[in-house]
Length: 465
Image (cartoon, rainbow, N blue to C red; front, side):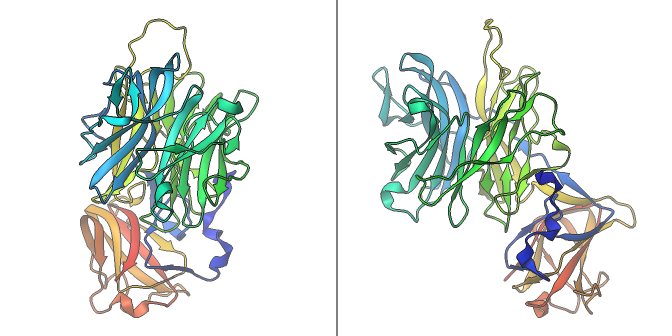
């Protein structure tokens, strides 16, 4: 299983050192960057729910149930957040047909659902931009790919049960007017929210794979494409195992590439417990976009809400999150119904789209308490480029000092713990300094960093300048 892989020995091409250049490095709970630790622990952090949740609810005649089986993107040119989401509507002779809704926001909190001339409802204009058709279902993932031709700048991946079922795609010049690709691009039963991303070289999608027998049959598969139309055969990369409750599945992935850092991919897979009907999101990480592991303890990274809330029974995260103003905006949908169907008794349903935020890079932290000895973490051998070292850390109640070692584990003169100016306070960009030395002197040399923590949290480091 992926959890058994020790990333400290991966990838093999690293050789005697890892060349990180000026790219930010995150501390995940995978030991990839770490050679030695003492007195520290990895902490999987929970994002903060916005107090005004839900931010979007089904408040239009055509919105029966609203879900964030979709994507939020920040449009730099227009200066707005843009969301594509799914809603159950009365259409094609069904009360649960699926259409894709669209809205915008200047602050990511207050959303406007514009009246568009794309899809009507009983003769009136709506904010819908795509009708999945009688067999349409599941979620939609939208990518902005400005490097492609103008008529294919925006790409959508969605699921259908037409033509035997499978994955379909659509293209748009503006994100509003979509042209469906005429054929199903990958056959199969890919129920629920399938997610695509661009990894810098190719498109990768994470899709739901249904295995039999029913007990523990929902898993997450991975496919690749060069053109968003021709896809490889899925391979399973993450699924339920003996560490999960009996009779549980992995339902959605919400996979994304975290562009703020090097070798950083994340998922928010929702664990479905067949016995309670609840869906709760966890956190999974990858360094290579192939091998995935769920983080330690497997707690719900966004806990369910109170019993009377819109998010008391189900939570599913959309993808990707938005990084803006040193915050990570994670949008998700909530529902007060268990995921299994129930007996059909009358029930007041609640659903909505909500927001939870992290500090920049705040998914996982390395922490040490306030014992006099504190704790330390030493990196594997690295080489870098840049003139200054920055760290993302919260040392409100303590301090962090950094010393630099050579590849024989000897402290380099002038870069010892006593010579380091202590890092105090909370900042996503602390600059590390030494009294008589500049870190630029060591650029291109093989070194190790040793972070000594007392009563503090360390998220990431980066050489800049």
